[in-house]
Image 1: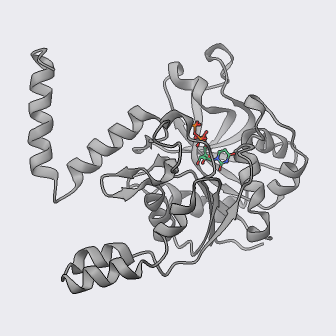
Image 2 (image 1 turned 45 degrees about the horizontal axis):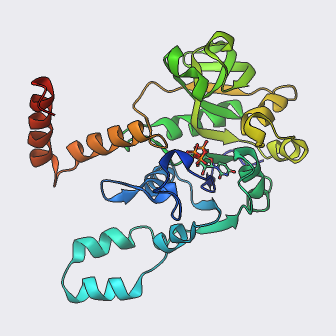
Image 3 (image 1 turned 60 degrees about the vertical axis):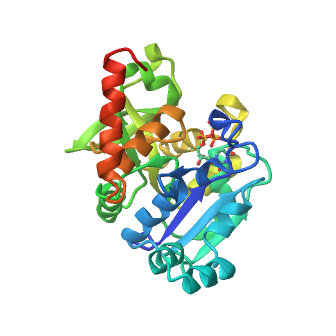
Length: 295
Ligand code: UTP
């Protein structure tokens, strides 16, 4: 089996119910953070780590993901003629990458979405990127996980410490610390009640998986919410081989949730060179109004 990670799966066939009605007819993954759709941040993150084959799992109302990563002749022509070279470069940046699309007919869960990618992955380890978990480009999470994979040659899940009041929203691990920031996982619970959570270490949207997960997913039964859960499949995999967690201490935005999405938008706008100065003074004026109860 290959040691380097060259393939990445982007599951993007979920219903996005937390963003309804915005996601009624268009995908959550295409919601912009400032001027790029969420999924583009994930694709750029993977490219920066040497991934060169991508599969996006799409579903109903997801065609504009394909259009986004395709050429747009009319628009390109228009930008060329009007001398908007910077914008032309921006829209063309990703149009020559190798992306396959697989349709998940029914949103049967994240585990099922991953299983749909089996013909693409074949016999190689691969990354899974949930693009509504936004990791800023200066962070090295995926890069560090890929490096760790070369050493451990086992599945690795990205973990983050989360407040216990939020633990019920995540898959949560029980594990033994083996190295600084690396846990050998011995149990996983999907969305536990606070009192049942085995730790405060939550699984976040970056995984390195090995193809043996497909055998487990093929036999998986629907779990929490009637969905084929990736967490349940990894839990079964734990009986068969070591699985590790990598503790990420950097910045991450849960942009699949409205508040996380707004936080990402504000922080990315503050860091955007074209917007930064004016946006910061706007934010300061808003903060002042809030502090004097005028907003
Ligand atoms: P979420 O748990 O965020 O679900 O899925 P969701 O449907 O996207 O959003 P909400 O919770 O209803 O608001 C995690 C990831 O798994 C993908 C989603 O697109 C998202 O990237 N997913 C989920 C699938 O591809 N297929 C599924 O059947 C379920």
